[in-house]
Image (tube, rainbow, N blue to C red; front, top):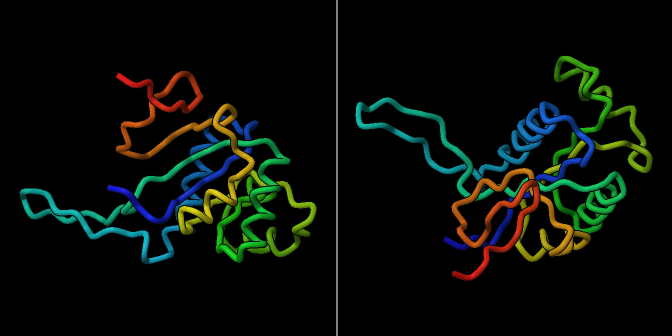
Length: 161
């Protein structure tokens, strides 16, 4: 299935593995607050019900501090809603403290661990225009798209059969 929107998470490339997982989870939680990205609840053969999942693939990319800042600026300039995870909230342990930490930050100098957004596919591509085919690095691609294969941490278009 082809989607006309994309869910994108961009993480800073120097995060520890546990930070990547943690930041991604928090950021996607923000994206999931947009009801258009959530599918229907699941139910197994016994009738047990499960929470719904996102209805489309999630692209989890990494970039440098500068690339992350460029992504932030491009999302702002295109008026795209997005979730952020600044470094400062690694030191907090609850939602109120997270909000207070973000409220104290100057957008021009905040150091982001990551950000995530859901947008029209063409807009998402413009926001992530800094990513080139040769430098695209994906830590994860939650997708059933067989056009992509993994070689190490690089996401590379699949070789023709």
